[in-house]
Amino acid sequence: MSTLAELLTQSTREGELYDRLPDGRLRCYACGHCCPLPEGAAGVCKVRFNQHGRLQVPWGYVGGVQCDPIEKKPFFHAHPGALAYSFGMLGCDLHCGYCQNWVTSQAIRDPRAVAPPIDAAADQLVRDALRQGARVIVSTYNEPLITSEWAVEIFRAAKGAGLVTGFVSNGNGTPEVLEYLRPWVDLYKVVLKSFDDRHYRELGGRLEPILDTIRRLHAMGFWMEIVTLLIPGFNDSRDELQRLTSFVASVSPDIPWHVTAFHGDYKMTDPPNTTPEMLLGAAAIARESGLRHVYAGNLPGQVDGLEDTRCAVCNELLIARLGYRIKAYAVTRDGRCPSCAAPVPGRWSEAFDGQIASHPVRPGGPRLNLLRSS
Ligand code: SF4
Image (cartoon, rainbow, N blue to C red; front, side, top):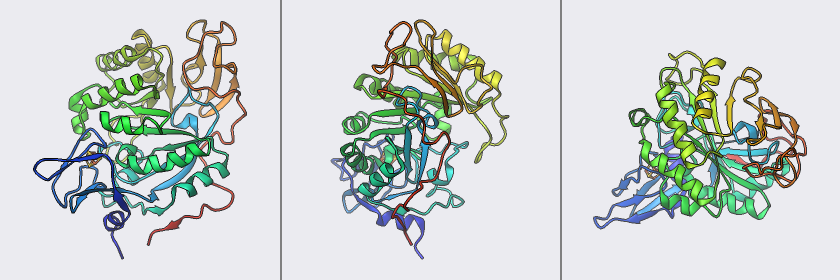
């Protein structure tokens, strides 16, 4: 029986995001590590490797599929209520001790993470997404940048079928990968984990490439929202939150910032769970920093209205939420406040048509014709 690493080595094709260095090594540009790869070597992510002078990259499978309300990503200013057909791959370029998707993200690094790949073709996934009623398709659950070529293959088919596309990413990008993705990715969620380079190095990354990616995403016209998981004792000091939220506001005060509650997971089980008061305190700092759309997540009904969207000009209630469920919707067809007509930043559908699901569900209806690799 093949090991997971052997299976994934077979499910590849030559990638596009690399150059040859003068000394014969390959330089991968899919994420901020920019690994130089000698013959036979894999990158930090473990899923891209130099084989006979060509960069082989993941292709033709998914690690899992789920139908999520778009509010779960979380995107609050992009097609509210839409069903987001969400696929994950395997592997990651970071190794966060608190990862909530570690079974897929650490599948090759950690022998306890067992997530066999599921063979899939791009048009199969798109057909299945349409069958579920999805309007959005999202690469999520592990780091999508490391499988950018495969995501583009799926998104090319998805856009042909009228779907909106998105990434949920740690933001450890490069100028090259963002240029490559720009024609195919509409929505980009960055998980900004900290504003301290030492913390990022503990997670296996660096802060600067992530800040650079955030600046570029905004300048290039992706619709971006940012989320920070608030971990007591790790990233919740007033100073760090002030610097983090001031940075986001300096890129644009209209970028929605979500601060969400931590619970112990994977290797990080010591910190206490985040309380509603901690979220409210962080949200207040974000407001002081100038952010206009601040949300508190993972504690439905306990965050004093910070699940709702309000007009930044007149404070009119635009979207009322409880958890992922939309309770009321008042954004106009052209994306404005119905009270003062101020434009609401985001990507708005012409109307809110109700939700197919306000909680995650497995794809239903006719079975997705996917075969487990053996
Ligand atoms: S995706 Fe990132 S970690 Fe993986 S090989 Fe490329 S640069 Fe290295």
